[in-house]
Structures are given as C-alpha cells and as structure tokens.
Amino acid sequence: MTTFKRTAVLLLVFIAVISQAFPSGYNINVRISGLEDTTLLLAYHFGNRKYIKDTIRVDSRGEGVFRDDEALPGGIYLVVMPDMDYFEIVVDREQEFRIETTVDNPVEDIRISGSAENEQFFEYHRFMNRRQRASSDLQRRIEMNRDNPDSVNILQEKGRELDREVQEYWNSIIDRQPGTLLANLISAMKNPQIPEFDIPEGTSNPDSVRWRMGYDYNREHFFDNIDFSDDRLLRTPVLHNRLEHFFTRTLMQVPDMIIPEALRVIELAKANDDVFQYVLVYLLNHYERSNIMGMDEVFVELAERYYLSGEAFWVNEETIRRMRDRVGRMKPNLIGRTAAEMRMRTPDGSFVNLHDIEAGYTIIYFYEPACGHCKVVTPRLNEMYKQYRDQGLQVFAVYIYDDIEEWQEYIDDNDLNWVNVFDPQNETNFRFNYDIYSTPTLYVLDADKTIIAKRIGIETIEQMMNDLF
Image 1 (cartoon, one colour):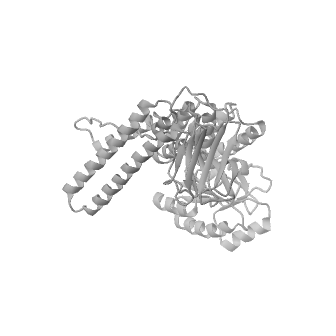
Image 2 (image 1 turned 180 degrees about the horizontal axis):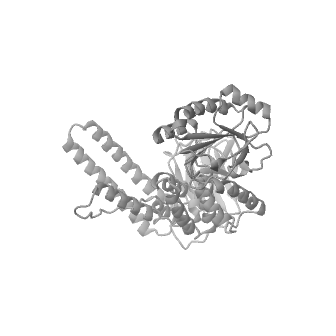
Image 3 (image 1 turned 90 degrees about the vertical axis):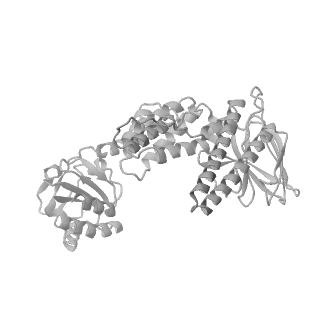
C-alpha cells in the first residue's frame, strides 16, 4: 500500500456505448508540463487503500505512456507524480486516450482527448463544482444573518432548492445511462429519502416514535441504490465508505442490531464473488478489531457462519485452523455468557472457586507484577475495592505466572486483601477460556457470574462501579 497526498477531486468517467467490447489492453498517453526525466505511477483505489499498477519514465517534455496488453479492470485510477501529489481518472471501457496537464495545477489544467467517457464526466464535474460553490456561499450568508430569522428561512429554502437540483441532475444521469460506471457510482452515493410519517393522535412521545420510524426506514433502505453485482465499485472508495458509514454511524452499536444487518448485506454481496469476499473480509476485520465492547460477538457469528462453514472459498486450511482457534478463544467469554469456572490456589495453599464467590459484582483481574500497566491499575483497583467491598464488590485477582515468591511479594507490597489466586499448571485453561494474550485484562461479572463487561480500562470500571453503587 502506498500513501498519497490528495490534491484532486475524483475524475469519474462513464461508458458512452454500453455495447462496446472491452479493449485488449490499455494505452494511456500522459504529458505533464513542468516534469522532465522522472517517474510517474499509475495506481488504483481498492476500498480505502491505494495500490500501484504501473510505472513509467517521462521524457524531457514530461511525456510517457502507460501501456499493457491486458486491459485495466474498471475503476478509479490515480496518476501519481514524484512528490506523491496525484490526479484521478476513471478507466472503464475506453482505455486508449491522452492526458495533458501541468504539474502546478494538474486538475484545473487537465485536457483529455480520445475519451468520450471523460467528456461526459467533466460536464458532471463542472455542474457539481458550481453547486458546491453556491452551497458554500449560502452557508456563509446564513451564518452572517443568524439574527434575522426571516433571511435565514429564505436562504435555507434556496439551499433546499440547490439540493433538489443536484438530486434531479443525478437522477437524470442514472436514468439516461443505466449500468454505466458514473451512474452506478452516483446511485451508490445516494442516501434513502426518508418519507414523512403520520403519527396517530394521542401517541405518547411522538418525536421518539418518528425518530425510530425514520431510523428503521434508513436502515432497511440504506443499500437500495447499490449494485452489489458491479465489482467496479471495489476499485473506488464509494462502496467502502458506504459500508463504513452504515456500520459505524447509522446502526446502533449493539451486536443484536448489527448481526442481522451484517448478514443481510453479506447476502446481498453474494451477487458478485469479489464483492462478497471484500464485504465479508471488511466486516470480519472491522469487528475483530473493534474497540467497542461486545463486538467480538459479531466476529464470532460471521466467522462461524461463513469461514468455518466453508463459504469463504478463498481461504486455505491454515487460515481455517487459525480462525477456529480464535473463535474458540472468544466464544466462551462473550458478553452475556456465564464466566468459565476457575478453581484456583490461594496463597495459604487452599483453593477457591470463582462461582462460589458471593458478591453483587465480581471483577476478574489478570495481571503480572512486571507489567507496566498493571503497576498503574493495581493500586487504583485496590482503592476502588476498598471503597465498595462492603456494598458487594469482590475482586478475583489472577496472577498469571508460577513464581510463588514474586506473587507473594507483590501481594504484600500492594496490601492486596481481595481474593488472590493463581494456577501455575494452567489446569483451569484460563488463558484459553478468557482469551488472555496481554495484561492487565479485566472482566466484570454480575451476581450470577454473567459477563457484563470485559477488556475495559480502569477508568471505565471506576465509572461503572460509581454508577452501579
């Protein structure tokens, strides 16, 4: 992956003649005044990343040719200059054309010949630029007239009129050029138009009911305008951005809401193998790495349903083995599950069972004395324990190693009077059952030993205990 500075707007182009056959290769002649005897890159978007496709040397006139016998897959491409500035084009069926521009103003000075696709695009591009300038001017005038409600209302209505003009223009392209790349990109960027809902008279809290109806409509129709069979969308930022927006900013961030929507979108993506692979991999990685507590449940659901079932046709046996191990470690300690039992030894040689602890809330604390973060967490957790132990808080502190002297010294030095335990032979398999790969790791259990929080920082636990007690 290569990182570039963005200095250009998207140069989207679309197909002028849908029946035209794909070319046998590409031949893109580039001349950039102001460059000489240097390197140009041809790169492409893939989701939210960019990859290099081709490299050429330009001559003393800044001219060179990107050429290959194999045609480029349709999508947004980037011509990248030596300082990593770039301008974008979209290549689809027309793959033999000439680009002329300047190094100082590559977008404003660009001229493309031999491509009707680009001519169509620039008409769209100029229209959008005019509307964006008008919209910015209206916003500026609204801010200047905040003390004059009548003026603000007039200006806001002009803004709504601009929005209607843009929507009408977008719809005209979609209607006139169905199936073209530009039409599919514009369609994919369109948000659902939420209708006005009639709320029955006497409804309690009508604003809340109206919000919920709007939320449900947006959720159900968010992907109506995306053609999941079009793998060209993978080589643009649009599909990735729509997925990101839906799953991070549109949906309520709870697994019970996300899981059915993730399954629905993945099934839609099966219209194309490459799109299916991208969407599934994106969602799997997103929820495995999520910082939001409880999202590992989404990961487990997707991994079991698609990877461990064999539907993810692109993965090998080693990947399946690692996935099965990862799911096995995560599944026993999902939020809402009963915490795995642990019978562990105490400093006096006796044993205690986690499930035998009678407490309104139990914090399981996995630690090691040499851990830098543990040295911060231990005294704060101890103070919190002393504050709330008489109200029903207990700490089940698990020393994860087997050095008894180190363990006892740590207990004494920190005056730890909670439940101190260890399992030197790992007989409880606690590392697997609680997915312990780093310290400190903290779990919060209720009175029934149900996991209600996990892998959260000491600050969050302090706030949580303050709220609970």
